[in-house]
Length: 148
Image (cartoon, helix red, strand yellow):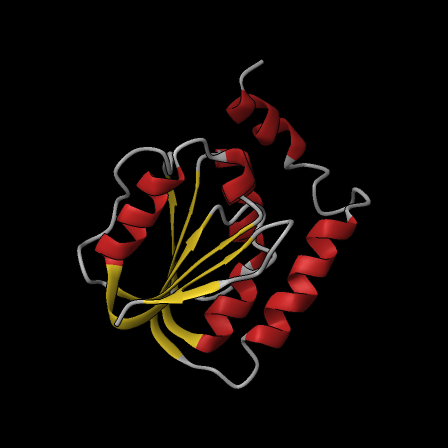
């Protein structure tokens, strides 16, 4: 079974499985983004939409990407707004975004699954507007990088 197929299968139980890392990530993300607003947000590895809901609350438009159709289908069920565009895409390939198009790019708990992090950072830099923020959460750290 491929990783993509496994994630499609996992999507039906992901939100109900005991996962303290996922739950802490959601709490932390809400705290980090309290009292913030963005025009165009990009969420990498949106999964079942645990943070997509928040991004839709604080953004005028959200583009949520995941490589699992099953995960995205669960996320669509949670987000009841026309502000979110979902895309199935492999983040290790060129992202389906325009250059300088987002003032916030977020990826939570996916970088530990990516072998070529330099590619991810190049794509984020390409898609980030000047002055925008790329925020990534990993199991071991929560750094933020701003494009200036």
